[in-house]
Length: 116
Length: 113
Image (cartoon, rainbow over all chains, first blue to last red; front, side, top):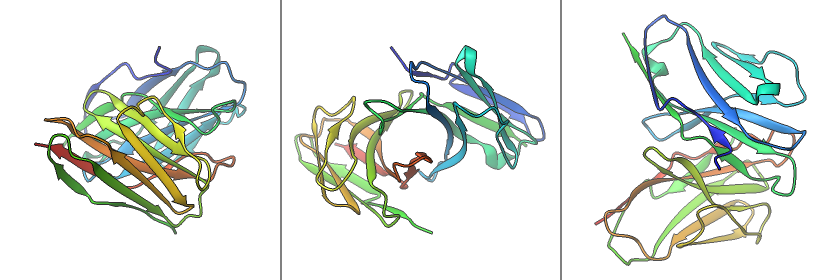
């Protein structure tokens, strides 16, 4: 069974709009981290933002923020004021504390197209 | 700041050929990873290493070998390239501490004729 699920494979928005990308995950660990990355056409994989399971803070980094619903095992990435350069593939990833503590598992990603 | 360098950026091979991909990092990170990205399948973990000379199999290790002879380098070998195979191989490293977010290289694009 997949541990990290990104339901939407593609999304399109107009420049200036706000977008929410959803991710759900499976874990039995108490301590875990969730990460969002952006994969550029150049090949670069850019780390965007992290959410720790033990944190209740609403994480934010520039135009990126997350909505963490721990009881639902859900984390959404919100990108505000979309720009054409935000186009790319966005990945959600899970790190769990446990016997496989060094594994980081990725979802299948969501392609975002921002139209000018 | 540090950098993760993957070589080569593009790799064209023949069916059945053994192909080696290299990755170097200067973050002094303990843990290094190799992921494979195929269209529609996300990133799948091939091998990872938590320290020099350590190797751990990921979910996609069959058909691959890996080597971590130095802390700063992690190489991946495709033991027998499959015809028409196309994928991007991404190397990453992390400090293994509380941050844990792996940092990535720019990838090696493989095409097999």
